Amino acid sequence: MQRRDILKTIGGIGATATAAGVGIGTMSGSAAASSLSIGSGEASVATAQGEIDRVSIQPNINVSWDGFDEVVGKVRVLIEAAPHDVENENVGDFAPVFRATGWLNGTDDPGTEVETGPGYSGEFAIAGEWLGGSDGITLYDRTGPDYSGVSQPENFFSGTSVAQDVPEDGFENGNYEQAGTVDRFFNPSDGTTENSEVQLRYTVSFHAPNSSIAADYDIPESDVSGSSPLVMAGADDVGSPITSYSADVIPYDVLQNNASGHPAILTTTSTFNVSVENESTSASGGGDSNTDASGSDEISATGDE
Image (cartoon, rainbow, N blue to C red):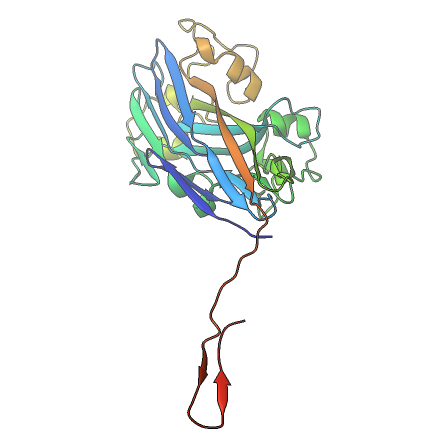
């Protein structure tokens, strides 16, 4: 099989893979309202047999908040993908593929992470290796996900208890595996191009600082928590207060269902297209016999077959 690696960039967002989806992220949040908008580009690849090895993303994400009633000390990013091959009743239309939490401590590393530290207002921007390392976040590959060792799938896939089920060397994307296999993108028809749609769901949430972060900043003791709960989770002055769950163990779907009325939760979906061309079969050749005759009794012929 012929393999093609491509690099697609849109607005500075890049992903390198056999077929790569790219995302452009802009986010904003305030105590009054929150919004999240992420766009995606198309990933195209041509191979001799219409097969690909990997689909991945490596977006950049910018988030800002202003006028919060509680100090934000951490920002958590969750990325999910559909369709998926995770066979578990605790996984719905989207399967988690990446989750990571940024600690706000004044990091200034352009191209990876830039943030303003903890505060009632601030900014947090991530890109490049922060999101999946140098190869990005794998969405689909040849092997697909393997969660056979997960002992508490309800807690693991809902996000209320993740670390205890992550193996020592991590899953494909750290806390989670890829969503499925690349088989769904194969194009067996010679000389044709087939398009497949991938949908991503991004969820960003704002959390309280722990004592390690607070040690270097003047943060009210009431805003510091070892479990880093969602800030203003059950506040009376938000449109959708979350009171049925402890603020440090709120399931993903509850966060997403309340995002429109809670400033500390941002969520949106984004779609991109994977286009796979099965190159036409053909053969061609050329050359020259380069024959020559010398003035002696010897005749020579040289050339390419």
